[in-house]
Length: 406
Ligand SMILES: NC(=O)c1ccc[n+]([C@@H]2O[C@H](COP(=O)([O-])OP(=O)(O)OC[C@H]3O[C@@H](n4cnc5c(N)ncnc54)[C@H](O)[C@@H]3O)[C@@H](O)[C@H]2O)c1
Image 1 (cartoon, rainbow, N blue to C red):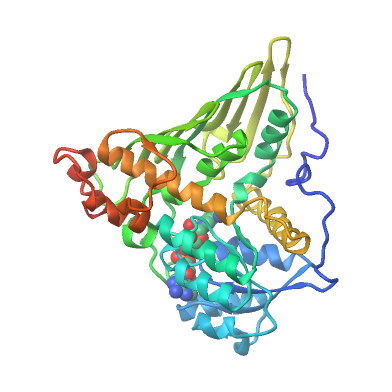
Image 2: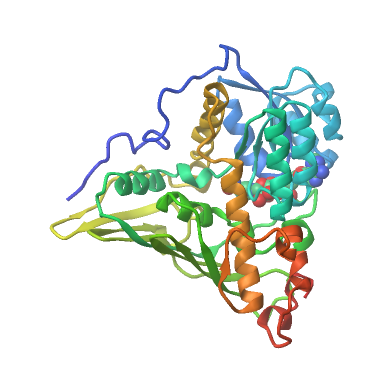
């Protein structure tokens, strides 16, 4: 039996109600900070296609990336800055979107908040929870909205799962399994530092930090925060990277469990949800991993029937991936206008970051780690750099692999 969920053919249709299109009937004036791959491939085309926003200025420390964005958005030299502070000084910018590597975000977000800009920030929010808390406090003090690019919430299959859960189609959720075992290890912009994701000082972690998406999605599906984490974290012995390329994670919620299996590798992908009255299974093309493969098949199985909801399946990666950005940006703009938190809040960004770091700490100490991390935990203060201050057994796998400078 085939079930077409009304509105689910369009990303965001089930969640985004009453789009406002304009704030005060004027386009929201945006400044882009960081003009790397994600900025040029996903964000810039998104804003170009949205009449409710206008990109007025861009900033980047790498001249070649600045030129590329200038061409893409047809900007003048005067609107392109090598120093972010100059962009932040402009009065004609309402909102900034921050797309630098996460290591630089604390300073930029706090400066943006102090300049009175609304802030949309790429994931992960920062490299240490203490930084995230400082950023959130700065935004609160300045009275500006601070949202995250947690765009996977807006994949049509994710919206569908959320709707099925909320309407009780499979009863209460007990276990959420997310397989991301064939994440592609794509280099960052060649003109900057294409390998920064493998440098813990820049990235704050490896594949799990980079693909933090299923961590915030687990929370999104359960509708409650993660209470504790435990994880096996590893790097294949034949590579020399200082970050993990394999993470097998268990998340504990008040009323259920999440499992995330993730790797830069060739394993299977997909989502499997166990409820008290049924199950949902999502497979991607060739049993691959989202978003590198588009949705292939969805099954909703209850005791008396099997449904295969239909979703549009864009064939190419760019179309499939890009469809998540517009509804996210639109929700963020609405949240400013309506004075509410965006669907993807900075607090959710901090909780997801803390869960990832809790996984690294769990693998280091070989025990369950409870969240939130206490403020005197070196990992709360410094992220993976704080792991070296923990009492880690000499034979621990992270040490043997020399991950994160251990
Ligand atoms: N939401 C998603 O699905 C998604 C996908 C890919 C990347 N990302 C995130 O986007 C961010 C950027 O990733 P990327 O792949 O585009 O990296 P990238 O290396 O291609 O781009 C980073 C850009 O930031 C610039 N930059 C570095 N430091 C800066 C500073 N202090 N001020 C201004 N500009 C600075 C660099 O010159 C470079 O152009 C990362 O945080 C990453 O996690 C999110």
